Image: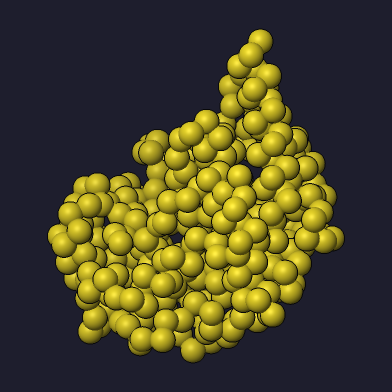
Length: 371
């Protein structure tokens, strides 16, 4: 196993309250026991650990600053972290920030430019869609504040800073309205996430295991996307289409490749993929109390415990393992397979949505290629 992505939880707190957040809204309490932000000692321990990892595996990896809201770390520590990462990691290691954009400043963007750090912004669509789920700690709208951050990014002289938009799907919204809005906003790319949920707690607006609300939404989006003569890249659709055509996916949760993903919390402790928090309280914690302050990442990834965590990306239930769709959907993200009775030994709660999307795209491609 080699590491593909390091997610740095540089802040355990957030400046807004999204009603769908898997960290704060789905029962996990781990964040309450973490330092609010990373200390300088932890920053330097991380940089040392990542430098050693890059040397030992001789292959680059992505480093993503995350939270909570990562910009809560503050400009001073952000400067220390980004400059140390860039000066100690090989050039093929990509550094990025996933932010709600509200705390972005010109100075932070200048720092990102200097350290070749890209910024992706979380935005769910036009104001009435975005503000229905993403409000501040006082319950007030965040749309215009996020838009100001996007404008700063777009007006910066470094055209490589803005990585794109990340949105969470609400299946009752209109995909055309959202796609058109993002195009008018001139974003460089867009991606869409399924809402977190599982068999014991169905995702938002999903009525049953065999319902296809999200699948219908994504096929409408794909039809708009494929008909557009000047489309904006959509990662989830590009991955699915490539996999149908025998290609590859760019991230875990699609296709059958196993990705090496490590989470480092604000105290330096090492955890599993943080989306597992939505399964049950503490689902993302290893039994071993690993930390960058005393443990080697290269040694951790060679352990049986880390291997068992990584293999969790592969579905275990016979329904998935014998399914003709598996090479494309990959069984979906592990968090979607959880049930209180069967653990992760279930098909994804989005199984029927995945099949609906795959069939739709496959049929349209077949028709187009045989004209």
